[in-house]
Amino acid sequence: MIEKMQRSRLDEQRCSLPATLKREEEYIPYPSIHEVLRRGWPYPLIILPQFGGYWIEGTSHSLPVSSSEPFELPSPCSGKVKLECDPTARLYRKHFLGKEHQNFYASDTTLSYLVLSVKYEQVEGQDNLRLLLRTRTGTKHDLIPISCLNEFPNAVQMAKLLCEEVNVDRFFPVLYPKASQLIAAFDEHVISNNFKFGVIYQKTGQTTEEEVFSNTEESLGFLEFLELLGDRIQLQDFRGFRGGLDVTRGQTGTESVYTNFRGKEIMFHVSTMLPFTEGDAQQLQRKRHIGNDIVAIVFQDENTPFVPDMIASNFLHAYVVVQLHHGALGETLYKVSVTARDDVPFFGPPLPNPAVFKKGTEFREFLLAKLINAEYSCYQAEKFAKLEERTRSALLESLYEELQIRSRSMMGLASGDEDKIENGGGGFFENFKRVIRGRSQSLDTMGIAMRKQQQPPVPPNRPATAGLALNQSVAECPKAIAAQRHC
Image: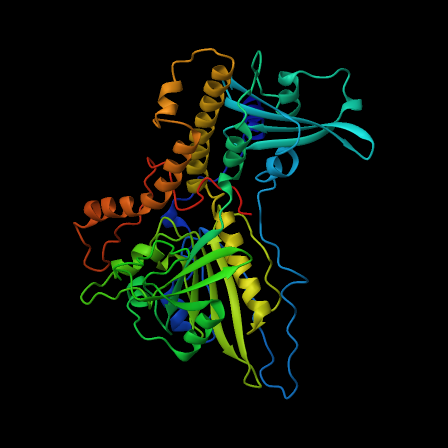
């Protein structure tokens, strides 16, 4: 009897352990692109890689099979398509620059360098303090009614109103007359008006990057789509944003597609316009540019599936797949699907349902806005976010140091660093220029280094992918890697 009672108690105390985590090989994978092709038509525009890692938007493309009446497609957007923008990037220029205000700087043992801007203003008859605090992780902003405060705060208390983690004894006033220019330059370094996007031409049944990068002929449908994107320009002596293409020696082809959209210059890296190298299965000349873009368009003449890991690249994080379709009355339509890596937040404008567009200005506006917003969103992915914080930290440190040196100099206090700035050895603007130059040069530098590292050995069934690994030790990235948003 005692043994039975003990066994019963033990049974009651037992709990079921959670199932052990599955290893990758134990997961049920998604169908491969070859399995999807074997199943036959119709195919989805995008299929997920076998072990996931991406999300998809726009999976419904159903249209009437035949109809004498024109089918009314839903409008992709109401009004002007919105471009994403960092709300803090222009705040200093909008509310502080050219108006009476005070700037302060401090160094925090935990938060590192801090730069605070303070302005008194009246809004609808109420007295307020507008505060802007810059830290290495971002910029905090608030408009605080003075009536809500027990007493008028000092600079440290103002900073704590925005960020409770601030732990400094005092802030120092900025006394340099040109400080506003330096601060505005720091705040607006996240703004970029230049973009470069890949355009990949995928023919029916092509399933590898070697196949899509080896296409040399353009269909009439693809040429029509490129005309919709922008202007076909001659690269020789081109004066606009060149997106890394050679405009003097013709080493990246003779033509490309370029456009200006709402004051933003866009250069497209079109796979068929980049140099084709006989005997090079990987077409590194083409992949060097498209593989180092962050967002790319994939254009399909006919119904064929695209899988995002088809292109091996550490930089490409989002794809907009556009498939040509002719309506019942012969009109040109485009089916659209979007895919991005799991750590890329969703970006607008959202695709309509069904995700089918008529050729025209409305579709062009939607597509270009989607590409720009996609790049902004990709910068929030883990790989880019780490680099962004590093770049921002370096610029904030440079800003702090120059504000400190210039302010001490204005008070007649020697800091020992004035000579360095006066002789061009330092200063915020010099460091700012170096960071910007570094962004544009870092991709080429990494590409050369990775090609040297990755050439041997080459697997027999899959050529090695060169020049596209993300070097974590490099603090820069293309264009506005420090950008949290574009304006």
